[in-house]
Image 1 (tube, rainbow, N blue to C red):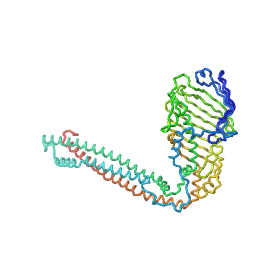
Image 2 (tube, rainbow, N blue to C red; image 1 turned 90 degrees about the vertical axis):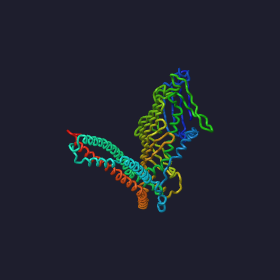
Image 3 (cartoon, one colour; image 1 turned 30 degrees about the vertical axis):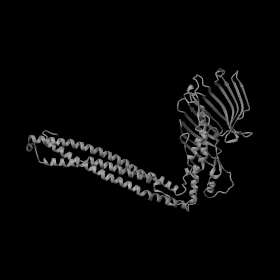
Image 4 (cartoon, helix red, strand yellow; image 1 turned 180 degrees about the vertical axis):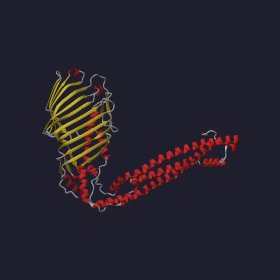
Length: 545
């Protein structure tokens, strides 16, 4: 950091700073930011209490990415925080970056490498078959428990025994005994019908769920096709995989920078209880923390209600920066810190809003931006030894952070991008085709998705780069690839066919055996109930029974 001049007047609370230059850690010959003038007016009263209350700040001539006269000496991100470095190292080590596809398919197809148990359809079909077997055994045991055939035989014997009988032939006592027996049988029959009906419903529900599981097996087939292509070393030619192979590493560096600044904010902004946590000394066991709990006071140690200034981006001017409610104790002020960047100059325009909320226990941050015709980042494309300069273009950004979780996406669109190879060695095979395809591609769209946690975010990448390369590779490989792909799909179909057929047969057998048995019980009980009701009406004086 370089400062041209600094004048501080404690009596009138004035601070004037000129020529501030902050070196870019990743490019020491450039400034991350350069500010021409910072004029600060402070209230003198709080200074006597070792507090800083700023009434106003005027910032003029803010520029980004300017050249330095002499390279700056910087402290890199990794030197500043060992804890952060370790987290990022673990994250990068655990993140898979797809490999670029190959073009030689002459000796890569070896079906012996394809283990059936590596296919999701096979695994799920076997699980369903086991579930069907267990469900069938369970229901068959329960069906045996409600088997009403002995009751049906006894009731039929009872009805046959009084067939043709009447009140006159039975006599008063005989008729009373018969009616009592029939009514008791009717109650037992109703109970059996209820038990069978409940079991029928449970069986129907279970069969419906298992049938859905068997139907869903088809949804896994496409994933197994892609899995087989990978196991058999066939190039996937999936646009998202190609985009990730080329762009994931440099974009992870961008994500690391974002996470670093979130880490910095978390380190220096207090929790809602007013405590401030600082990284403690490095120890052999574990890095410690030092926490300061300041006494309660009506004023924060530092408070800035509003800051406004003009900003230039390179040679483009006409932008305004505004900071609201920046202070060392947000819980006292009760309002989140807000940063706004806006303006337009010719075709360039910017709207950026940042909300850093430390008022409550859970940190909440929001970052939204729409930038048009402004500088975009350059990305190192290591697999090709090349660099992609996006030039000027549009940025759309929406990120949110709640506690340790992060989500959102960033989209860059550039119409005048350029590609530069930094090596002189000859490229061969897929790499040479990739370079021919990419070096002529000037219209670029890249989307970076973020989710998961701050220490191990999950990223997804989409780009027209992957689509263009996939199209070129498919055209180059042509019929050879399509034949290999067809063979791989046929092999997957052969491997998943038996377990899927077994699951379907088990389901059909369960529906046939258990379902039909219960339906037979239901039918017999319904017939007996109707016969009982009819006989009761015949033997009951008056009507109804």
